Figure (cartoon, rainbow, N blue to C red):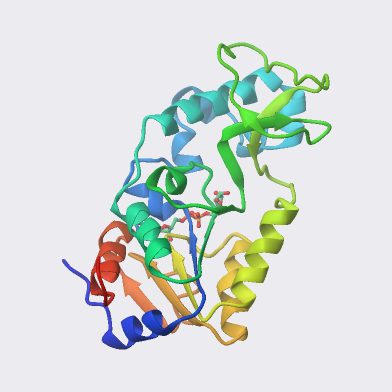
Length: 248
Ligand code: APR
């Protein structure tokens, strides 16, 4: 079913000086990316999430955690962006000042053409060193056994945010700056349960922005949002782009 986008929302979007969109796992669902818990099947089901996604888990069993992420990274590399990702890349081109914030680590927004994406939870496509926060880099080839060491001597780890870790400082600061100063914010495909990301649409609203949720299911944000577009991101977002006035 084609969702209907309120004309008033399109009018507000076309007039907005600064627009922010924040995405969660739901936007990648249509690309076939399993959520963390869904991915924890088969061989991996025997481990607690903290054993696979925390610094303590990594220090206790570096090879296990490295292999889990390497496997997930390889799964992600086989996927492609879907119409929702592409529609957001188009919005960035069509709107004068558009900031994309994501909680996803899959890199599919960049694959769809979005630029300057703020990655709140890091990226599974990169690694960095465990102890010295050395620069992020591509996954090394042939890393089937224990994690290799960075030139600084520290083990490499995936560049994602683990349980108990702070969000990357610059990414969070950039996200807060964007939401505090936008006129309209989309919250797309996120359960709005994981903080601090869940708070960002509320911060935008407190600062006078119109908040629009896109999700097939209700979330804690649904009763607070100014507009709720019920449906899959891969359907609603292309409709939204199509409804915008001006050349496509
Ligand atoms: N389009 C839009 N939304 C969808 C779609 C779709 N096609 N399919 C599912 N959803 C919605 C679900 O209704 C749900 O509200 O996406 C949301 C996914 O929720 P979560 O799996 O909790 O994902 P997210 O909110 O991104 O989780 C935040 O938690 O697991 C940690 O660090 C991980 O970044 C993740 C964070």
